[in-house]
Image (cartoon, rainbow, N blue to C red):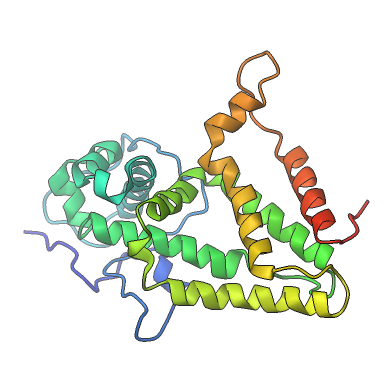
Length: 264
């Protein structure tokens, strides 16, 4: 009988979240298994017809394993974004991925571990993907890039954003081990902003509040996507928002509020 992957078994043969820089130290969580990381749209796509079912003597290198794991991941993102951790079930994830529940449990330890892995991706994005970068002496360029990155994530990966938001609505208890690291990463941005203020490159303000305002205004387009489409309706039915128009407006709004000249 094929051995089911167990805790600590990360030999998927694919890229996974643990290969990226992750929180370390005594409070950092240990992920019991690893899913392949993708930057594709997280929306659900049904299992492919040629996806082999996990029956018989399976091996870790069997062709199609990575595709099955990607399908499981996409299904989990949709389920968790709609129902949260408590409201989701492995049965629902399995059905959405085109698997039976026993087949699903061949590939994952359980929904809690799968959920934690997806939350880890959000925290990884906070630290690495959305770090302040470029010419740090130019706040207009740095903040403009940061706002665009956050807005792009909201449009490209709305379900990932909603998983995080649902976790917040449930009290954020599953992120307890991550908060110290998130505060540390945020503090680096705060220090950079305070440096700009000290050099007279922007008006005095609370850097943490500025960052939270940016998070709120960009994530709005993921969490409230149906409202955005309806409110932008010009009489021809719900409209897909023009991302570039929103980005320019948002960047100009924030830079002006910071006392920074808006680039032409």
